[in-house]
Length: 469
Ligand code: BGP
Image (cartoon, rainbow, N blue to C red; front, side, top):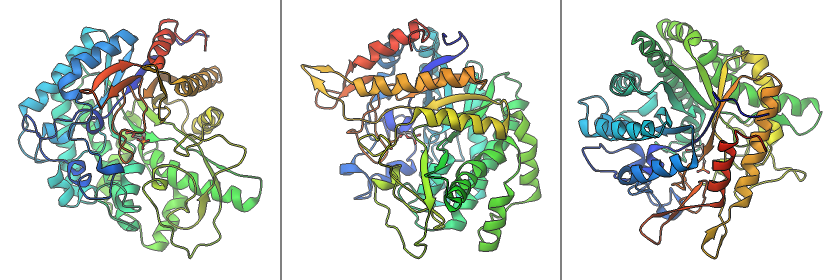
């Protein structure tokens, strides 16, 4: 089987992780500009001030993408570049940058797939309560409209938010991301609801503009599986999926919240403050979503957690995806299993779980169009005689593309695959050491770009439409 012509073989990035130019051409300060400067927050104090300088080198980068043959490039727009103070004037220089980037992609026939929010928010808004403040919702809708109006003639695929669960849980539960708050469950749920409302309102606004493109959201997809057949562990996996999948997917695709979670959090006093109008907006927007984007890196293996009293210290390392933690409510725990394979950063490698997860998703949400908007291997690539021989990445992506083929043959409506990431970039908390790209960036030599072995391999895969996968 080959990947059909209308299946995008692409790759992705995000503004803060690649652009740099953090204070150029009128860009406002973002929450990440501030957060990464707090001692101890990131690996060796790394930040995105310069990142890989995509802001200045986008032409060179897009040219490399064209050489690779990418069907599509997923990137994000930096909100503070467009509206520096969050809610005021539009910065024309910011619009100009993305106009240039979009035009450069189109010049080579690369379809731009644009994310509006990949975590960098104007600091002014963060200071005023960020996603817990409903004014942020209004500001976001205004920003989204500004982007639709400026770029919508050429951009026909929009993602509102990237991984709500990650920025909300790290922002308000573990404190590993801005605003760095720990253990505030009420704020966590409020933030998620406000994001869903911002998404719904933006979708409605987009459809009103009649630009005839697609719009959706990107969620983490880490389906939970019980480690065995014990009832209590199966209940733990059910609980994990309700809190981490259903809570996120239902309000978007069904326009309502799952009863199971509502009942629990109502008892605990964590129900978000919501209005009938907001709940109606969710219902109105749900059928207007054109697709759902999934970021799949790994599944979760879970057991019932018995030591509920214990407070688990989350470190930078274990808060970024490696198993070993109890859930915030102490109900379940993720575990590492002896018979599974893990990356250097402790993330499980399991293409089969993607297929199983997609089948369950189909049972819950039917035939909604799906893009895998991120998937990839974080590694320290071997350099041998100046060549970057990233064989493990090739194996990883190949295995996942094979799983995608299998899922398609089982009737899953998959329409694209975006490898994370197109180029080596700043890992939010793990600096530049954790590499994901097809293109290497030499931090010792002027940020020079170099093609990795995987670059040539992916080029061939695209040329052959995956025939030999
Ligand atoms: C996702 C994010 C990406 C990227 C990726 C890898 O959660 O959407 O922006 O960072 O994970 O994560 P990390 O850099 O922590 O390995």
